Image (cartoon, rainbow, N blue to C red; front, side, top):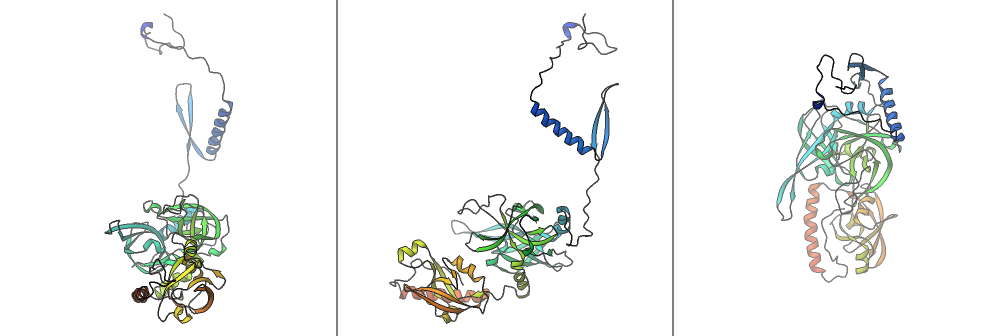
Length: 441
């Protein structure tokens, strides 16, 4: 009976009948080919072995009396993030920033009430982020996170949750301040957003999708002083970054590599002007902290941003198509004037169309809102008007923006005034054909 090296029985065992011992001779060696692939594989092997050479254990596995297989086993010490010397004066690693600041970052959940297609009020919920700015529980977030909330709750990384109250906010600047009943909290360190340069590393901590809590993402500053038109039409100054920002990150902190908050993550671009879905990657935006820090302190002290300019009109847009159809100028149509307001004192009347403030051209009420950011209560400006088809100018000294209670009273007066004007001026050439919605300026 013939045995080759390939079918010889193990030592100490009886030979097996050839008819029951199926043997296949080895396949001949394949021709060498694919040199480029092997070169890549070799390069990878070199990279792996090179990485092990710096500190690895060796594990020997015996596969026979004469053969030994050597396996390299990594021996790396556990990562310890040292935050004892974090002073915000020296650059930090992302790990150090996270360890030092994640306890100052909160997840925010809000209860709201929405109206469905049939006009029914139904409960809903939303989520966002925020950050602690004082030991006694003041928290900053975006206004759009808490807008129309009926209840607000904040959660910390250790699992502690608090009911929060709204101290105040400013919709035009998308900021809000919350307060929780807590002491001994660790606030973030506020930085200088004016010192940012393009290409500088930044990190964000937040709750993307409202579920992936306390996530850190890292990127760079892609642009500064970026004018961005928000979904509501308001133009805001923003920091642009490729740091991953998604729904749920809103209101969270954007840090420089010194562990200082230099922005409030707020927005992400959509690939469709008709869609609210933020689907474009690598284009995130944050509000520069320097732009809103005085407002935040103002809200804490006064419950609102004081010194905001107020005209006292109910506006409506005159678009290009409207202008051609009705023979008007493009601008902001004055639907009504609040009695006793700065607008009435300046001589504005229903039917005027505001086309400019000082040297700034006005084509829509979003332009008007953006332009008014450059003024404070008590400032004086020149309004250029289309009045009955002729160019006119008036000087206006802005009042201070009213409180919510004052606005409610004005709204009731305004609606009554508009009703009376519509009845009296149904056939007036300059009676606004689409009516007006309450939108105070």
